[in-house]
Length: 191
Length: 181
Image (cartoon, rainbow over all chains, first blue to last red; front, top):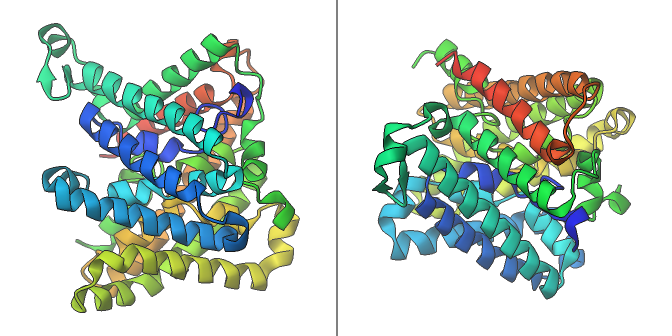
């Protein structure tokens, strides 16, 4: 994996869990940890044998298992998220991971996604609610930007995180990134 | 809650893609070209509606049987079967419009819609919720494609090309939808 096919910041895959779990630092950390486990387990599955639909059902199963584990060990966090976590973790990212199916790629993808989730969630909580991990910071609390605490805030913060990534890596080259989504998921040949 | 409220809530006020973030990948990744986006929205709406209608009674049955934690798995299987059936029935149409149904429909948006529909009190509410969630997604993806076609003509600083500008466009759209709250 290189910066041209970074799964979360260039190819859009994984945008859903990043946006859905960006309300606060701890939610981001829990989502990143759950996603890391799911992606690691998923990379060990025989994706080609499972096919697209098998991969989807396997991803849902793993996300459900992650949700249940969270309910068992951290009930308050699980109650706060509801089925949001499991649903948001299911998606094309798992299919993409199955296609790559190499541990080295998986580790890099996990690190990028975890960083994207945690940074987006932290910035959104800091500027939207004036706190970090639930701890209020006086200056930011006095200057909160209300829109960032609401739904559009997730898009705005993630956009700036992605732009920062592009700026640091000289990205922004793949302007038709969306067109790559199908190929990246390893599905084009199955048409 | 009246059915009109359910429709407005599902399609606009609590838009599944712009406010709940389910299905963000196809929304951002496939929103290129208005006709294709519209065809994709139509396909997703069809899958959401049919899978939502089927999910409601089966989800209730699982809850009553005490295995409600398996409901997401069941919804995933239902969605796969619906996708296969629609693909088999309307393959020429999807090929003509350039929409490959499985990659479009196998996302968290459809799963989230089925899950939300199953949580409704009555079957009718669940069915209306599924339709409105699909219509909301269709509306969002079509509007986003329209905005993107205009943005494409403008100069965009290099770091903001690709995903960032699409996210900012979605943010503006999300803010517009927020006005209905």
